[in-house]
Image (cartoon, rainbow, N blue to C red; front, side, top):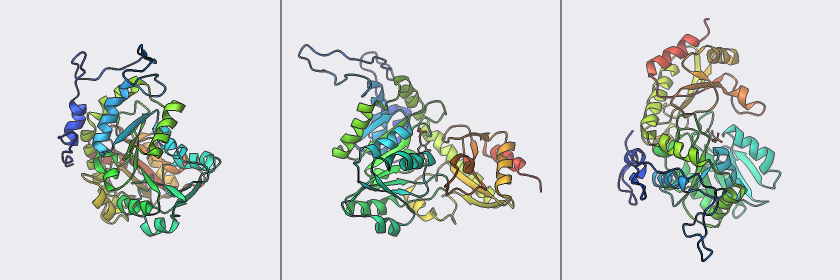
Length: 387
Ligand SMILES: *Cc1c(COP(=O)(O)O)cnc(C)c1O
């Protein structure tokens, strides 16, 4: 992966920014790792003000600042907020809207968020349409000027890895007066920077590639502007308290320091496994943006740098039973949900998503970790049912 070009506020590449966590040194102790602030409450000054801006840890905590600064740098945003989970971050974006607001969301998207939108957001009066986000024309056709307040994208989108053209959709959305938020969890801040393509908000499940070790739950939003909408979103977090523990924030910063190395390996592994499995006789189709004949490949090539991500899905000719057989018989690929960790995971996704899923039942979702790619491939192949 090519390191990103240096940016003005921190004149080094994303590799250097990550490894050094922007290079900050603790002023009090000269520590090269920021301290963890466990206090829940902070002293007022005699003039009744809060001299450091810190008040109470339900709203904010100084341990988040180094992570938020790094995310702002990587995504080239003005604002960043850590949350207690990716879902807490994503739902804050919708909770910042008002009853009656019209929203466009993808047909193919992270299942738990789609469920939340259907089960909660619609009850609170959001008017949400789930549409094909791989077509700019379809998006343009559904935008309602001054009624559509938000276009939610996820690219590459779970679990079919559909690719959306962020730049073209952002231009169309802005024309209609709507903001654009992108769930960029699978693209990571290294492969795509949605704000530089015109998006207004980027969301990450920091549980995944940012932390990378499957040992904390956290989320993040990065904003292009500190506008009224962003302030409402910040208040959703601060007033509702959807904040991570300070220890988790510190662990997240440690995980992020190697993200560029992990993401590079995951991308290499995914590209290799996708290419190998695409040629295998037991495989009906490999869904991966890095394959030249994949539907979204051309847009992905423009909008992703350094790789096409660590996620792919494989459809088996033997149908659901073959897919479940493979998941049952891999040894290296761990049969578990989630993604973005150093260990490779495999999942029969239709079993997780249940009724109404766009996910075919012959599909296995695979999160490529950083193990040896030949061993990962051999493990998958030995798990195929004998015919
Ligand atoms: C995991 C995930 C989420 C939700 O994040 P949590 O941290 O599990 O709450 C949202 N979007 C995508 C694409 C994810 O993979």
